[in-house]
Image 1 (cartoon, helix red, strand yellow):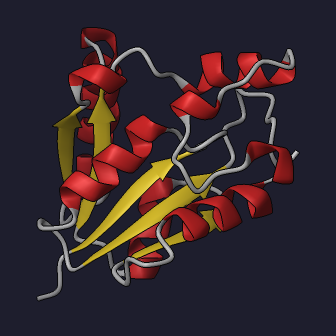
Image 2: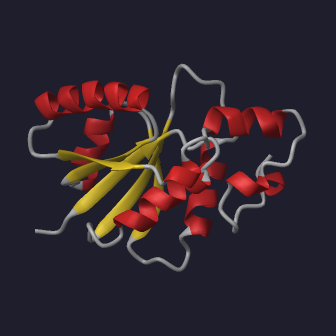
Length: 156
């Protein structure tokens, strides 16, 4: 059976921390889908299509990674793409508690899909999309927090 991981999030924008989680997961899965969803509690900086394009450009040389957008429940997207795993990055203890609760609910809703948590690399722990969005919105240079292939001005 092919191991297909869904890495869900809003990825607004996609950061070095996100890239690191995907790269470190390459040996664990046959396919990784970066699933870019709508987060009702966030005011987006970038359009969904721009985020999909951005992630696909970052991983253009990695055949087993693709980005797709989705609406609705992550479990429904997992069913659609025949996912076997959900991949999540954990930066802090607060992240763990939040992600644990979601993973337990997802497991009840979709028992055949396992959640996998990877701890963020120490150098990426302070990188947070909300903070990076604020830097960009206020005209700051966020390039040191974004994958090398991302020219954020292209997507604004």
